Amino acid sequence: MEVVVEDQDKKRKFLASSADIDLIRRIYMTAKESDKSQRNMCALQLLMLTCARPKNVRFAKWKEFRLERKVWLTPSKRTDKEADHVIHLSRQALELLDRIKKLSLAPEDSPYLFPAGDNNVLPDTAFASAMKTMDVGSDTQTAFGMRYSAETIMKNEYEYGAKDGKELHILIKIFMDAVNPDGKPQYPPEILMTQRAELAQWWADKLEGIV
Image (cartoon, rainbow, N blue to C red; front, side, top):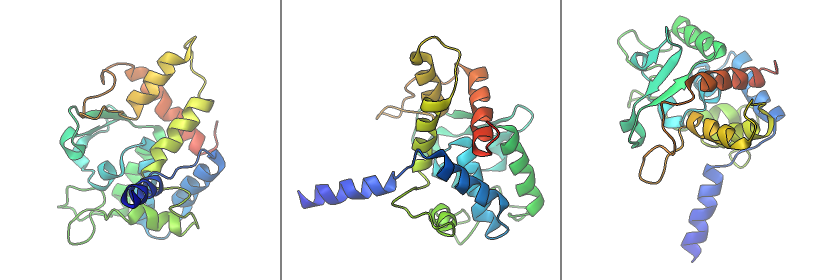
């Protein structure tokens, strides 16, 4: 029984998230304006703007981005899912990608956005390290918990045209790449593309305090 409790505590800490938009915005804007640890700060911004899983950001490759279409195609095999996921890129995300290129965070021969260390990818501690410099502990907010923070804020604050909340629920779940235990998408991944792009831009604007 003690082991179960310990596992539950670890899971809660791993998923720690805040629905306080002021805190989430402070984390994002601090990362954006910081001139320290550029690799970690840029990775944290991309994580927050796209609501991607941390592993997808850590292993992100330039070839996955279709900038002319303003999308990021994350491969299913990376997170043991059945289908690839289309992440729509906001104006801020596109500007960030351009900045990452100009900062030359990666050697020219590296396929990764954020190569680092012997394993050639960003360590899984990078996001926590970035937030630690902002005095944000893992008991308050974690990298994986960012997805839950965004989802809660979207549910509470996004003004969607649908008459009931069902389509908004579906929209957010697809946006978050929600899957069932077997790895299959909860909803068809090819639907609501225009609405997902609009939500991506709203979320980026929300992070910057524009809306």
